[in-house]
Image (cartoon, rainbow, N blue to C red; front, side):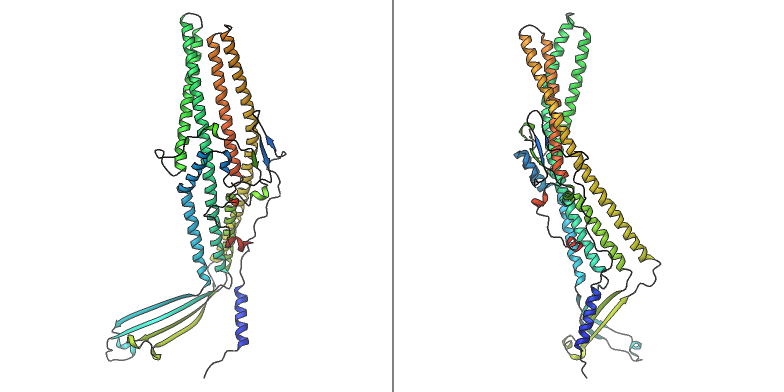
Length: 499
């Protein structure tokens, strides 16, 4: 007697299974709305900053951020140093490896949506107990060959598996943005350190010149004091100034060497290795046109904000996983096998045996474990939400700090340039008066000392202006979206599911 299947009944059953399987418990992730602020500081945004050398920096809210923003400094050595770091830096390589790990975990997670099929083969030789077969007579030794296959499938009726895969996708997004943040931080650190190295080198040379002038000044004062022309207190004062300058030279030399060591580290080598370190502050050009991203765009571009958002997505999916654990889980399974005492007879119809079944796992009493795990997942979501908000606030603060720093840097450079110009004019005037016999050589040396002190202060202000300009590009996200790195994939399944 053959069994017949009612097509209508079959269609109804399949439809019900599909409808039930479409149920996914837990919250659907929704991206946080962009901020409504239009500025980073209370006062009106600055448009142009300039010094008396004509080095104006203009801000443009509609300007695109170049992904290779460090090339705006027009230094081939700087570009080579950044490229070398992006190729060789171990921290970036580790971040990329973590990204690949999370992507493979995501691909592995997709396997839950497919039936799990396995095969087996066994060959045994055994002597069973006679009582097992209900006989008092001994049972002979025999062989048993078994060839089988099994298939199982979990019905994700309440969406626990889908939420788990969603969490894996969001985790992959997180690792992707962590890698981007590492990429951005690395390039910013290389540029910042190279500028610092160039500034320290220029300060070192200026300090050396200052020490030479102070040594000459001290020698003249000592000669005058020996002949009773100048008081000995002047000699002591000049010795103190000379010692202070020599100490400052040692400090600047140490900072320059530390910058060299850091550059080597960032480029994936040791300080004894071959790396670019011959940076000259005079060869760097200050970028004139600077971008100024709106706050609503910043939260969609900064890698650290996007990473915090991905963690929020992970926590949201975790609530769904914990919620699904409160409901029953269903599974289907089937086995088909061939078994015979002779290997050649496995194909006989008498060797076949099979089974089909289904199972349900119902949480009846667990002492509140599943319920409190869900509450814990909800608390984790609130924690991730607070972390996201704080990350956004910190990003806004960083941009605000950099904007005001650039404005104040321009003022400082302008003031130091005026001071340096005045010191230079004073030196020229003193030299003219000296040649006319109106002042002593000691006055010339004093003017030289003042000139180099002003030059050192100017170099410090100029280096800081370059560094804060670098900080602006980093604070705004570095423009990676205009030219994504090779490890970055634009399409994200987790992000798509969360929309």
